Length: 74
Figure 1 (cartoon, rainbow, N blue to C red):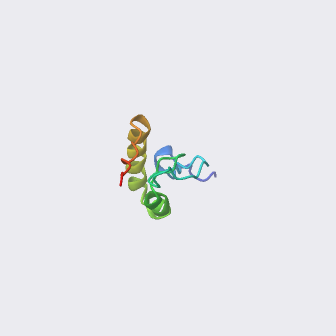
Figure 2 (tube, helix red, strand yellow):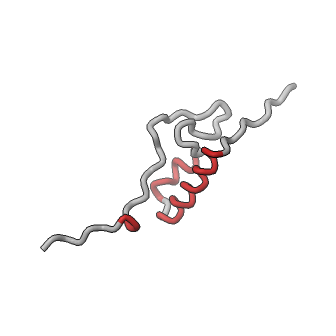
């Protein structure tokens, strides 16, 4: 008898990493996946529900890219 096949709903949530691991000039977001350093570091410990919520945020970031913070003039 064959083992049961996992349904897609129960598959692990894939990482948003696209292999372009470089932070933007303001050191806020990875230019490849648009995650913060904190989000990247916590990915492996997140529950699938948290990963899916982050994916939703990343979709919004891709649709409305974050603007760099204003440059302070002395």
